[in-house]
Length: 348
Length: 271
Figure (cartoon, rainbow over the protein chains, first blue to last red):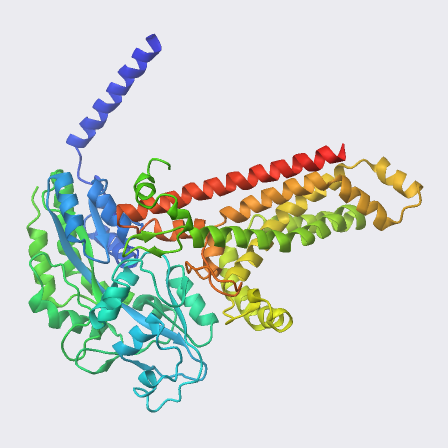
């Protein structure tokens, strides 16, 4: 009995101590974030650069994946989450009711998905139409010299070889963006397969992560796969030009990504959740998306709220400059303005 | 695990084990391709690994001089310490191309009439995963076998020689006496193969399907959990993955029990 009371007393003491620490949190209390792996390099660059500007800010980010980011912010175990795809209405509903708060989306940079391939003897970027990509991934177009592909590449002699299809097998924002695009350009894809972080691919085999898919594509002759643009640039992979909604074949470059965002930014909804795949307008690459920070509007801890507000304001102003060097496309001006509005709406 | 998988157990019942549909978007889940991939890849791995392991063990304990024995056994044991992700990358960049250009065409030209060796050769797939697993479990089985062989009294060997047995006959007798230990080592290796995740997922092809051909991509239980759990969004999806974990637990349990039974019956016959 004595032991039990002693334990109880010490537990109460510990919990009192905890409370005290929270209420008197000093500037410099740790801010925790978790989520998408794709923007991790630029986020960590931001944290270290911002640390030079504001010495008290300590931000810790765990790149556990978009799904994990959404889960953690819903549970309220982190101060902000990050995701490559916007939260669905049900997810937002769940998070809002659970925390009696309002979740907001802040776009930070633009990422994109590129199709990479391994066709011996072909060094130029091949041209792919939406019909060709869906056909390949639905398993309907079986050979590289299929008329659907060949007719858009008149100056290339595509081989009479079977296409080996590869995909991301682990749940990922990359797959989400890719299937979101395929769902928009093909009714058949939408009904048969759908859009999600992992789907049941009708054809091909899976690799784990960008590095797994790249490994497969590099090893298997006549294969095709999809990876993030940053990854393709870093590893000097060949990638295809994709036909956009204007009928132009566009190479995935940082400029063509920002263009895609720019030309759809007029239609961006109030909550900034927008898919920019298959974007309208000249010069825009069609398979790209925003990556988001997820954060609650009402911050319970004023100190943390203040730090986060000034950090995100800094990130959207000065931080965007680091984007290009790291292979991310910066947001267009109009979207930066909208995102800043959201940040200034944080309450604490 | 039992509680957390209630959602998928309620919805799919026992059909979960027998369904080969796995579609996170439509929320249709079935575990059969994963069970198939796990068990088959592990068993093929064991079939490949067992003769090699025994050969290595015999070589080290019966044949070579001590000056060779120590460094070689050290090298083999160090194989067990390599992280499985390294095996995975080695598999995808070295083994898979080798399988595609050499091993698989050879198998197809000799055994091509069998359904197991038909179809397109990717290099990755069930067979490649089995080979990786075989390499990973060889140090385990061989070092246990070697220890067992070393434990056999010298007097027994001397008795065999005294009766005029050749070296091979003496080794055969030693192996016969060591069979329960060899079995035990195999079970340990099999357990490792069943639970192996990273190396397998890099080379198995990760496609939830059941095909007769060993060249085709497949999937394993541990791999699907590792790949999909972090990003699983729907509660049904999570619940199904947890149920796969439960089945994996069950499979390991059954295999271990069977092995115990086997060891028991072997040792009983011996005495």
